[in-house]
Length: 271
Length: 135
Image 1 (cartoon, rainbow over the protein chains, first blue to last red):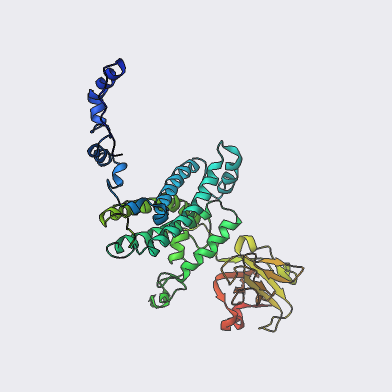
Image 2: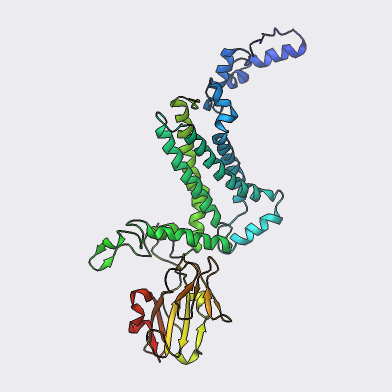
């Protein structure tokens, strides 16, 4: 874009109204800069826009090379956005109760226009797990976890766990046999939590006289399921975690993650 | 996170009189209470006739096995563990036999089952008099 030139408006009717428009108070309150036809204005465009300012005004050539980044971080973020959108639409139709959960999911296939929303949510979720892993793999293989980016690597590891937990909690919501038994098997792992699980190491040490403080009805698994087996309480808890708790947590961490990419020197370059 | 009230089936319940049960595995309480009531002419541990209550939770990862009456075994649909009518595991990944629940006779002559008290074969607990109801 080196050969940009400034076009002097001819004084036609169109140009006159354009000039009038861009001088109005409304226009000036929205756009704080002139058209992005100079380097300075392009920087201003990026700096004064809340969405664009997430991007740096300059970056390394390698940072936009697909062979280097695979765009996996960006794709993960894109999938998160599309999952949020389709997820909100699904929330209009899905009721997390024993009576309705399964039939609502089956009904989604036929009862609503664009029944494809559930498929987009499901396949998008699978794809996000894949892209998050590949993003992590790329970051590892390019050594981008090394100083000064160690902190951001740890943020990323937490977000990987949150992504997997989002998948896990979403798995229960169709409330079919596969879902119930998968969560039964998965949540049984929480029994083995050190100290907080009824069958975990150290939990037998927590005694008050002869009474065990940690047992099947108050341990980590119980807090997760809201009961001693996968039932009504578990469905509601997983729904709330899936739709509110975990997405909020991962959104906050994503903001930190993107911020730190910038503050730690931008996308890392080839050595 | 820890509600004071739970809408779950009771751990302790009466299941009727002994003469209401024919020999073999009885499935009538499986859905409601999660147990099989088994009446046997001679138990492998107690070496007497009577009742025991098997808890219908697979000892592998916690699914509910199915009773296959034609093959005389409990078969878990999740990963294929198999158990004899006694509760002893013989195939698949389950590491130990099914657990038995406390089973005694109540004052009114009915059988009382208490799932809060469990007996594990590998710990020698099936020899406990309350793990088996002699008739």
